[in-house]
Length: 124
Image (cartoon, rainbow, N blue to C red; front, side):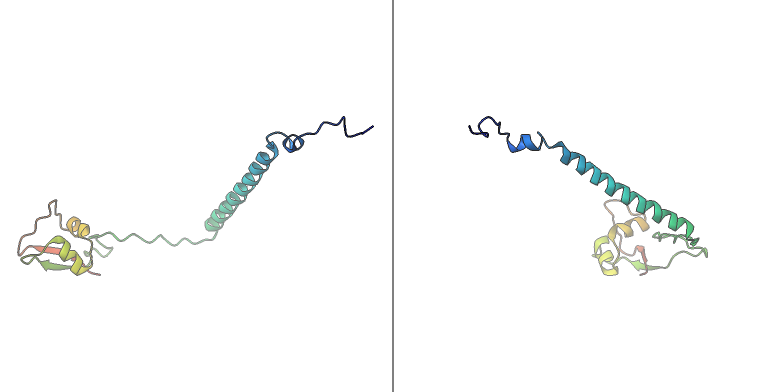
């Protein structure tokens, strides 16, 4: 008599377990480990920065037209508008964005310029 005749053959999926839930568990274990490692690094870095004793004040951002600590206005050049000038051409010639020129000189849309008008242009 043949001993293999009465054995039931299982498909590979049934032999390994239907759905293979084990992979999902391993994925979350690995992801959780990575998250834990990264968050630990961030906490250690924050503690180092707090305890490093670097009490230097943060650098103040540069604001167009701002007044510096000495009470003098930031350096500007004055430009007299000529015939045919537009805000765009003036800004292009001086390397400044046209929106910055409009804001600094309190110009509103459609940004009209008059011949002889004086515009403030920040020095670079």
